[in-house]
Length: 397
View (cartoon, rainbow, N blue to C red):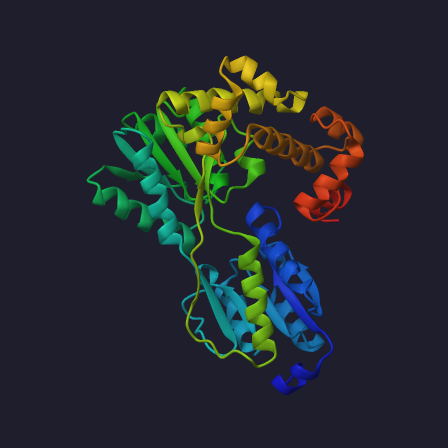
């Protein structure tokens, strides 16, 4: 199909390959959908896991006249070769694209600042306490983005003349072999500070630290990436993470593909995406009295939010004034105590929607939400869909 033909089509048919099982993928898709709500006429086909993106996918796309691809997944070099040979416009991430893929009129790449993410992680941990050593836990399957985060992290740590160690994952590329990680964290000089390639890796590291009877964050502080609230809020202690994806990234990618499909973009340089911020939680709590107060507050909220506790209950438990507590939450979390309670309740709500078959009304009550109709409105505003729609989507239905 020629570019001229694409211009005159009433609608664009686009394949979006995105991992729907994590928060990053869902946020990127939300950004694409938000772009489409501004009068764009696309028909989207989702491919949610890498194993579903095959040579037959590409052959079918050519046969069906697909207009464009958005690829957020790590595909094999052979699949990439066929994809580029299809001559269909593609927008992807530089970190998942193999070196053989040459940027040009039909392949535009977004570059996430993974080195900057690593450097930000290092600066946060360097400021979090007086640690004897620092460590990095990579993604077990060798990925470009994981290597780049390591490069940024280790450069910043060594620039500050600190020791940095790197865990070597098992050769099977699995996160399930806990014994090697337990042995590694046990052998670190303490106190130590760890940076995990993403939140999933960090949750396995936290399990290993518990198995080694190491206190978090007093003996070992730990930081992840993705800010996946379901993961970050459902470990003990809650996980500090770097948020680097917003819906605007998805909008940026969709906008670039539309320009390509209409012949309006001939970009050959990388498209930069540099947003990143620390979302502080308990796993890197500072050791000041203010931080210790915050740690106690967050522990109480994590354990009791679903019981319907209110701000006054948190204040009473801590034995401080509400004014002081609100000031500390604004300082450390950039939110109010009430918002922190809400965030924890919603994190537990979506976990139960995904992992249990309990009725929605029961889950809502068990998570401390008293008014179901009010919750329904708030859930739609927060997640862009109803609780039933969210549950079905998470289960691939």
